Length: 307
Image (cartoon, rainbow, N blue to C red; front, side, top):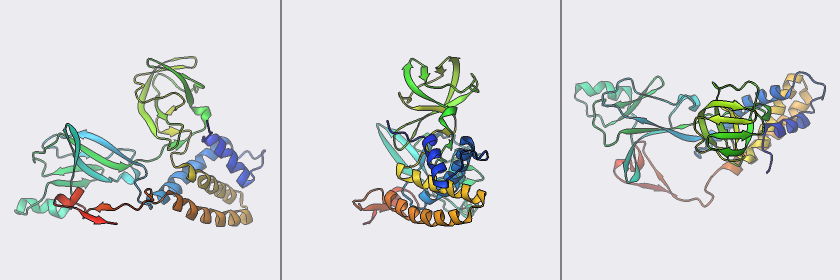
């Protein structure tokens, strides 16, 4: 299996930045921390500008009529923003009904006889359905959002699944700081490196065997790491070397290597353009898109098409 792990990328960073072997400032864990910063501060924002639904996930919550405190935006949402809010209608087939976002002016005018469509508004980090006493055709609200990529970690701090028996996973490595209070997630070793399972509690440890409260979704060869960590950058493979270049740039800057920094910065900017072109559009056949005025699918009344 191809090695997409952070460990291999760290070696690429050392080569690119010509980091001396005896340089104590840049241990593997130190470089991984820099790589995480570059990933979350540069790479992810660049990919978000493509507007091609990278990182989109959703969270379902049960609707409580009269709920005035709202429904929390997931804690792993980038910028604590939502992508969309819909009602889930389960009538044999999945049916999603988009909700319009309301302004505070619309909400405040409701009590003065203003007609307000059923929708939502955002208050701090919560989604509030309005009017709160409106009867809905669904008991589930689905919040779509852009999920923050996991922080990176070396393979020393996680283990690869070699066997699954019941709720017991046999791993290649079990970090010494794991206990029965540790919560873990599972990362797919294949592109796009999805989180296969999250929030799984360790209930027992014995040698290389780890027992979880639930192993649903976990497969052989997947990586098990503490919740919120991943040994693989959760971005397309084509972006990995851009991450290497960006990390090497940060190291050269901290070393005061102005000449090396300027040369690599030029290459980084060129590479950014090439990588961006490789990840967008995500449907090269240029299909027609149904576009919305912002009130959900079909704007409640019909479709408009854009080619």
